[in-house]
Image 1 (cartoon, helix red, strand yellow):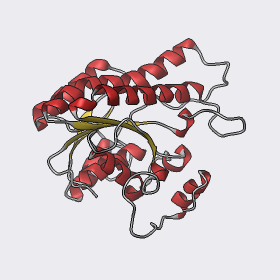
Image 2: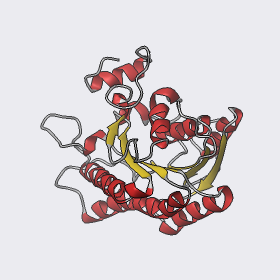
Image 3: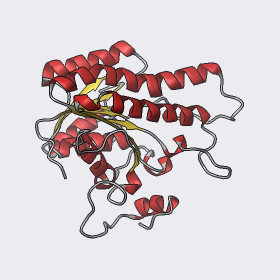
Length: 271
């Protein structure tokens, strides 16, 4: 995969789950990673904290530091970016993974307060980070922004499983539109902006376990390398289609464990 040596990456929501996997994959690819979450402290021997992410990355020779940041607090996000620039000299890669907790609601029972807070964090939080990093990316000659979306942002169909989370699904659809808007807005400044869906959340959001860093990490490393000219930008992509409809094709079909094979079957793809 691509060598990200010398690149500086910010990963929001990096303490556990898919965000942890992304941060470790970028560090493994050579990037200098600033991993963000609300708290830094924790047991470095147990998955679930930034302390563990730092310990795991450094044990493998990666360059990763942790910083506390709350996406519900605009000042906290601004400070995290400014501190990254001060300590690392700039930003080349932004991965917007932090989200408002996924909460189920009947379609007619979502309060205006729930709509507001979900959009504030899932769309507004990503916007603030993009607003803050893009000038620094431009100053370094370009960059790559990756926004995390979800399959439930797609058009709903009767009988499918993407019901029950109206505020979350609609906010992620808004994030996808923000992605394509910013991709067009900053294409001539060499900033790529894409969104990617990890797949079935039930397969990767269970805490406290190691995820397959190759399956989830390689698509992120590939996107981190992209620039608008001759690369990928303005796209809403899916992890389970990587190396199939987008990304480099492997010489031989990859072999996955049963967890990933089951997820691929969820989307009608032979594992």
